[in-house]
Image 1 (spheres, rainbow, N blue to C red):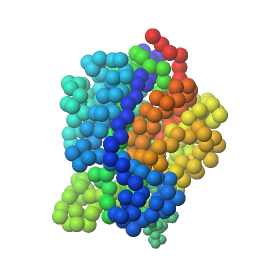
Image 2 (cartoon, protein in one colour):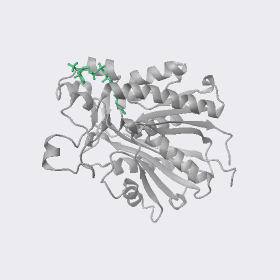
Image 3 (cartoon, rainbow, N blue to C red):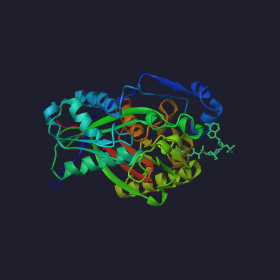
Image 4 (cartoon, rainbow, N blue to C red):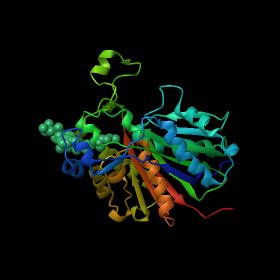
Length: 331
Ligand code: COA
């Protein structure tokens, strides 16, 4: 029991077809392709249909991961979903996904850790597996950020996109071990990135809607400073814990908020540019789904990748880092 290893068996991702470019945004708010590109690195983002909810995006990613896992549906024993754009405040988005996938009677839960959500969810899944409570868990990070974005606020609306990624985590199969991790949160900063209304603190009223308080609010510069600091510190801590040198990391998978944040963190870590995974240019910031979509591309495209360092920060502020290590292929 103490020797169980939690591994990623397979992954999948889904990006909505519709693409919103910086040029498109120029006709919606007072902005420019030049401003968006230089400040964020983003060129395009995917936007879900109005009829698609977060669980629909998650299901499409999960189906691919399940198909590639070679496992039977009945072998999945739990669903964990990282999201800040749940279909409803309750029930959990994981429950909607259970219904749509026909995975009846297994436990379902959501994790709200914003952009760090996928790291939190993978760690939770790995610990449940290592405890031998479960053998196979479906982990999903799905976000419909377009639903909580204020399309009249140029400081936020240019940043976000929709998407979903999923992984099957198992003690039975797989060759990518979920290794050392570090997670934390600094709740002194709950007010620099949030949606003020619609929860129990400030229930939705006509007035909150009129004041657009049900959309993302952000103090960009404060977020920037803390993002760099906490991503760097998390990565340093997890490297130390793992005993890996930075040269042994052949892929850095950072949260894709902003290319400037990623460059600042990579520079402080001394990681070579060619070893940094990026999807922010094409997908924008998909919150927790940035890492899940990213991990799917890395594992599908870079078959020889050995050590992946995931690192993220998000509203809360939450932060964390996780090492994924290639182990000898089994069975
Ligand atoms: N197009 C054009 N101008 C814009 C704009 C846009 N889309 N969004 C903001 N601006 C303007 C602001 O209104 C401001 O104008 P003003 O000086 O006339 O008031 C100006 O650009 C500068 O914006 P500001 O936010 O003060 O700072 P900055 O130049 O230092 O840029 C950010 C910093 C915003 C780019 C940076 O803070 C950032 O990217 N932070 C991280 C945010 C993030 O990644 N959040 C996601 C977290 S998961």
